[in-house]
Amino acid sequence: MKKILRMTAALICGLSIFCFAEKTSALNDAEALIRSGKCAAAIPGLQKISTANFTKPDGEKASVLLAECELRGHQREEAAKVASRFLEYYPVSAYRERMEVVSAALQIEGGSVYSGMENLLRIMVYTKNPAAYDAAKKDAIQTLAASLLSSEELFALLAKSRDKEVNDWIALQLGRETQNQGRFAVARHWYRKVIDAQASASLVSTAKQGLASLQDRGAGMPTVLVLVPVSGEYAEFGTEAVRGVLLAFEENGLKDKVHLRIADTRADAATALSITREAVEDDSVIAVIGPLMSAPAATVAAWLGTAHPEIPMLTPTATDEGIAAMGPNIFQINITMGKLAESIADYAMTCLGIREFAVLSPLGDYGNTMSRSFMQAVENRGGTILVQQKFEEGHADYKTECDLLKNVRYKQEVRRRNIQKGVENLDASNAKDRKAYMQDTEVQFPGIFIPSSSPADAGLIVSQLAFNKVSGPLLGTSGWYGRNLISQGKNLVEGTYFSVPSVPAEDSAAYKKFSDKFQKRWNEEPRDDKVSGLSYTAAAIVIKNISAGSSIVDGIRGASAFQGVYGDVKFKNGANDNARILTVTKGQFTPAQSCGDAR
Image 1 (spheres, rainbow, N blue to C red):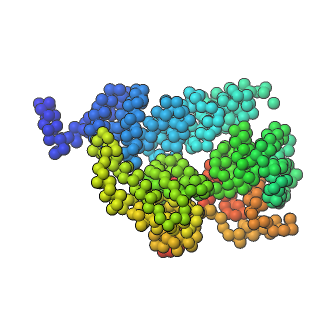
Image 2 (cartoon, one colour):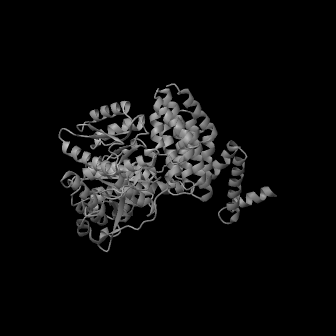
């Protein structure tokens, strides 16, 4: 009788509740098998549900369970196919991050250990799905315990992790790896990190054993090393920086308590590195201020971030993106172009709810830097870049670029439609449909990022997009800020969003106070290049954390903000993140409404 009922239900599937109940029962049976530890036995049933109902809720969930079971059963090729298809079709899903964990685990098993770990840590930062978080964390710890990563890779991952238990494991592995390399001072640092962090009993026990093994393996006045070009082409900048630093130390009564070691880098990367290594080896260096130029700053940061992560380095003026990412002890006072791009990406995803973006990238250093940073920020938050189209600013006609964007969107929509229909060839399309789409359809992207370098160019490209029937929320950066944006783009720029540096006018109270003190000490006003004020700010941050009596690095990273000469300094992953988002409302630039920070 039950067999007859099932046959009858199959015949009327889609016309009554019987079909739904049959599928739900099958999925429940598979889940029960998984809970009882019989993942392999659940695979055939999950395959049927996933294949037959991929675009429906049961199929959506079954696909994730299927990939997880196939991964557990080392059926990597099959798991990869399911994961790839799912992630392409479902840009938004309650199960997406779980499938992303599967994809990251497949990377690790395939030999791309660092990339897979990096993706696991990214998922842990942005997911709000507890199951996905726990799965990512479990895979990350298992990978760390297997000792598959070098000390350089471990150190890079530490800057990306926000989970204490994962950080404790990374610290222990850094102790082991650096001890194996003969870097005993650094190994001691990381073993102590594990103990001080009150990690799990097993990790603390292992760290104590490591410290004991280093017991027989080597203070005086602390020194702050100031790396500036005292001679050569950039000597004037060096002089201004030294004046700012000296002013900060003198007014805080530290002249005879902390030694300032001024070192001439000559704005040369090799010289700056050589001086730094020598100073750290023969002096009690507790902090580094400088270098000023980006190339020397990056070179010193790369070494100091790996060899001595306990020593903070604050570069007052370097603007290249990524210097602060070279270690948890590296800090940039200046807001970089990359941070401006990251800020608008964060706002778009957190406050506007955009997950997919088209990028119109102007040719040139500015457009390349901004586009690269924006795309990385989007991917770090689990978003997707649908297309990047480059263009040359200043042209009157962008039909070609717009057609290329529309073509990409058409192909994406065709593939999703074919996935839904179950068509084998996902790129199959009708030439007539494509022609009509390209000519008549108003093509909308979820979000369009355009890092134009000037307000007039931004207004022009906005007008061209509208004329060529390409639409969506428009996003930019500091290059948009100017009245020419509104005069060129008119009402079309209403509701656009862009990021700008959060730097107040120089008649602010903080600047006037600094300027008065500087003029009294040096008998002249600070130069317009802001080097003295930024260097003063860097020194003030160091001084504040020397006085705290604990780890200077931890003190800097743990503070919410520092008052600076040109505005508050708010570090995020070592880079000043104090940018603001503006929008255009009724022809006026206004602050965009805040909705809180991303997780």
